[in-house]
Image (cartoon, rainbow, N blue to C red):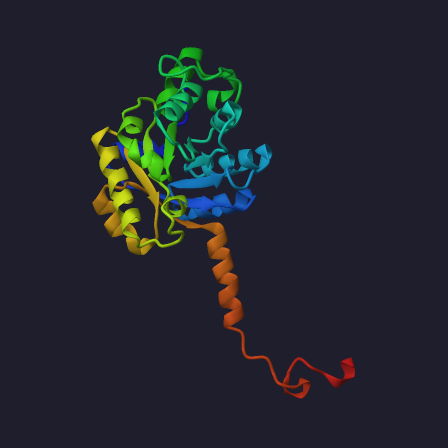
Length: 271
């Protein structure tokens, strides 16, 4: 028996591009719908949402049922919050706001097994096939078949990005334009020159140090992002799709009648 292979890592290591879709809703069916549609990776968020662990487990099962990966953006601070998604068999974790090399090194120490780090060992969960995997094989494959992403979303981190990228034990630098735009005093100004420069810089440094590059972006931006060197792009979210669908339905409704007599659904006998 082997640990389940990561689709994301398989494609990235082959030089292919990965499509990702963000899940905000606390329902495994959202994950399954996106997986059936064909997205390679489903991004579940614990930094801003805080799903119950049982919900997270069901979302991971839904993705696995269709051969897709889940990456969990973890809340910062607790090593338990970092390793639990991996033990539930998420294919990867994303750590927000990595600010410097010491923070990055601490994450690697907590989420990678020996000889890379000193992650707390259990093996009795889904990622270790509930102890069915050979112990040493489990440690080895958890290091090689699960990915770790560092989010670069602060100007301070950009200043030391080469030192961060040189660390062993993580796989991807992920540029977050939203918080970066706040950090430069231009919230939401996506075309700001500093954001464009930072996006290019992250991709360049990732390639220089043998890391993958990821970011968010719309479909219209994909050509430019791919040209910069980004292989992993998150291009949508369930709440965006549902919100826009609801708004479109309402905007497509016929205009309301000016009086009850003009309404075909109005019947005097109902009064």
